[in-house]
Image (cartoon, rainbow, N blue to C red; front, side):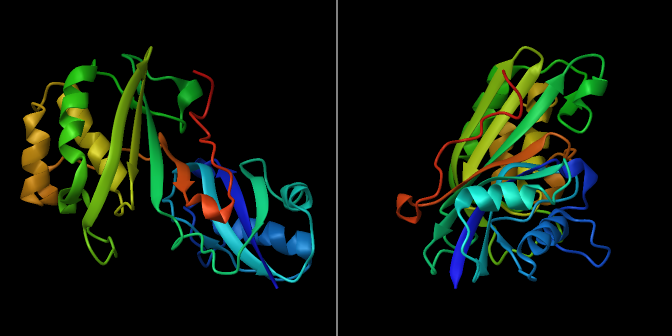
Length: 261
């Protein structure tokens, strides 16, 4: 029995999230159908982190167990031949039997792309969030600094979140401006349900001047979801990278932004 890891890219706008559902219209359902068609066997996958409806992935990581002996290139080309245009296997590699896509991950990196212009862009529909009021970069960067380190992130946690603890370690928060695009990159050991979208929504409040940067600290310390901004739209959210120790031998490169800068 071999354990195979796959790197998956997908456009989440056409799917009802990652996790399998009875109607079968999820990324996991479609990926496993493609794997079944390629291998002629029913194989279950385990992902690094479930994404919601409308959320994309530049690199989701899954593992599966199989008796088939195929090269990494064969896995990529073979499975992709059975997948729709919105889902693709980017890479494949054989890993040790104790590798686990979720439990072996040491960090996750999410990227949110936000279009800031008075007029919405049809070409960025489902690819980027949109705010028509002008945003100020520096106040958002100042507010983001309060999020760094280990905190109780209950203020940014969805009511239906099933995580055992709301305490997470935020390793980095970077905000870049590229013309009319703002790119928010957050990396933590793990994230709560809706945590990134709730944080981005609150940073946008600061960027619009609705709240000062220090408000972010007050919200974080208050641990009250009702004090933070509403959950931001899923359109611009990307699971950018799942980080593992080098010992597992997985590709290390970051996929960057979903289009050239």
